[in-house]
Structure formats: structure tokens, C-alpha cells
Length: 373
Image 1 (cartoon, rainbow, N blue to C red):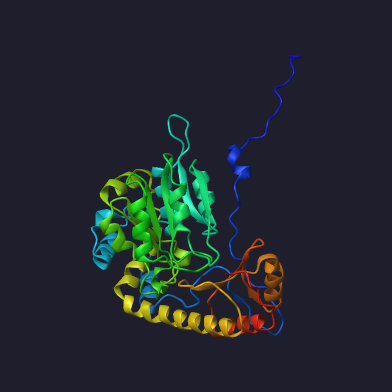
Image 2: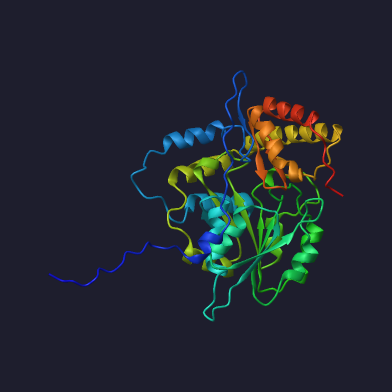
């Protein structure tokens, strides 16, 4: 019998970066309060279901024992016609976040010489950005927003250096709301080296009503280093089916296809998205209802003395600072879930009419912050 000491057991360990990364916090469901209907206003979901034609397409898709088309050919062809772009310029993904993850896997990380690529983005912006950038092995470079919740494009241009590989422009910016304008984006692009990939993230594009707002598709057509992210989660009410896509020139998409997650878009999601595009006029009608409610909520808040950023998304931003947690708790007591961001502010999605009315009443009796200049 051996008398040697056994090898001590060691626990498996993740990459060191994992413990340092921020954690994604999904919107919480509302608290159930007796006598009140509960509403979730924390996840920027469309409160309306998909249009009937989409539900019909979902019910008709029964072949779930087979893998879906890994290239989402039907959807890419439908999008190509809808957007007037070549189908080869489109790569689908599991929502716009899945599409972004594929982009970063191809264009941002640690190089063979050990130098990390840098990814520049505004902050605060979409909270998944630093997570997916660091997961890719790249270095996130966060550039603070201006006081009115807009991107500081001058500062972002100054943050670009020889290690910058990707820039993320979130428009409308989530969670603050302002959309970037064509003139400022064109000026920004002129300051950025042509070998840096500029990603225009337009998850909320259908809700934009600012006539000066940038249109990512128009911009990508003019600039080979510009690409666009879009999703069916918001306007099309397909958040649960996870279908998004990127649009870029072949010099970009050819590389993304190498690392794209196979079968990321199910056949159910693909058929639903195709049906939604085929009846986009009905989608627009539903989007307009959200926009009308957004207009009503913004007008009410301003009438109550709230100073909030412009918003072209399906949400509003309350810059509450240290009062953020307190406001979120008061909302919870009214059976409303809202999205609190540390000690910065609250994002409130535009929801059902009754939910919006209850939110307005909550704001009516709450001290108004004066953090915007």
C-alpha cells in the first residue's frame, strides 16, 4: 500500500477577468401589491404583443426537431429587400447583443503580441457593453456622457488611439434616451481612422422621431468602416425569440461569419421576423402608440417641473442621483418595476396606459432633481 501523500484537490477557476467584470442585471418583475395591477417598466419591452400575422407564423412553425438554417437565408433575403442592401451584408444573431458579441469576437481582443484592443463607448450606455468587451479580451474605454445625457463625441474621438479597434455608438442612447444626429456623427467619423470599426447600435431605431437623427443604414452605405446593429426585440415585440442582425460591407461581414454562433436564430424566430417585416405597416401602427404614450409621459413630466433628457427610445430617464434607490422602492410599492442604475438614475419603459399614468402620479409627488444643465 502506497504511503505517498495524495495530490491536494484544487477548485476549477475562471479567467481572472471574470471576477472583475460587472454583472448584467436584467429588469426585475414588479412587486405584487393587493388592489393594484402590476406592471413591468424595467426592461424596455414593447407592452403590446406581436401582430396577428406573426403569431400565425409562430404557430405554423412546427419543425422544432430540426436545426434551423445557420445563415437565416429567408430572413436575410427579406431584410435585404426591406433595407435595400445586399443580403451578403447581413449577419443575423441572437438579438442585437448576440450580433454585437460576434462583431467583438472578430474585431476586438488580445493580439498575438499580447496587446489588448480597445473598444470606445459612451458611459453610461447599454450596460452589456463592458461585459461583452471584456469577455472578448479587449479593454473597455468608457467616455462620460454630457450633462444632458448625450454622447460626448469630441471626447470619444480624443480617446481613439493606435490600439482602438472598435467604437460603439448607441443611438438612441440606452438608458438616457437622446439620439445622435447625422451631422455630428459624420463629423465624428471624419476624425476616426478608417481602420477603426464604428458600430451604430440602433436597437430603438423605429421609435426615433427626431428629423435630424442619424440613420445607420444611410451612414454605412457611405463609410466602409461603419456597421449597424438592429433587433426585432423592441418595435416588433419579439424580445423572447432573440433575433437581431448586423449590416456591414463584405470586408467586415466575411470575418464575422467565421465566428458567428451557428443556429443562433431559430426557425421559429426567423419565420416570425419575416412575417413581421411583411406586415411592417401594422408594426408601425403599434410603435406609434408607444411613441404617443412617450410624448404624453414626457409632456406630463416637464409640466410637473422635471428636467429630463430628450428621448427617442421607448423609455425615459430620471437623473435622480443619490435618490435613485428611494424612487425605485416607491415605484415598487405602487406595483411598478423600474430600472435603477446605482446612484445615477432611473430608466422607465413606456408601458401600458394605466402603468404610465401611475408613473406620472408617482412623479407628481416626488421632489424634482436639477442635475441637468
